[in-house]
Image (cartoon, rainbow, N blue to C red; front, side, top):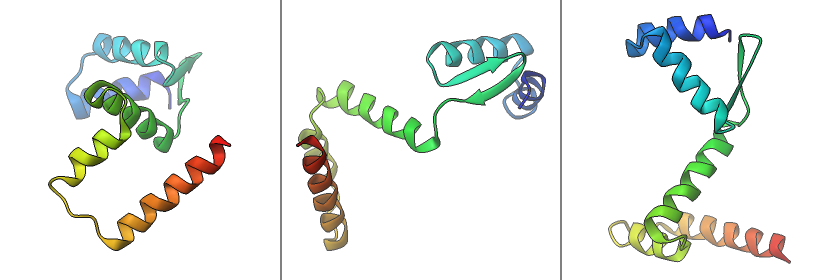
Length: 100
């Protein structure tokens, strides 16, 4: 998308001024999430990569990077189904295999 299209979209959806949009876009580019080449704005991350980074940051900041502490907090209020338990076991097995 062009930066002009992005500016119009942000104005319509978020009621942002042009300068606000350009400031936010510049910061997102500085963080490596987007790039702006000659007025063409593109994402540098897939949606899945973005959520993975966001989730890691949340666990790092909230649970001192401890995934077990995060899971303990998450499951203290929600009982996992057998299917969810099996999916988590598969993820752990895959993560353990890739660490070897």
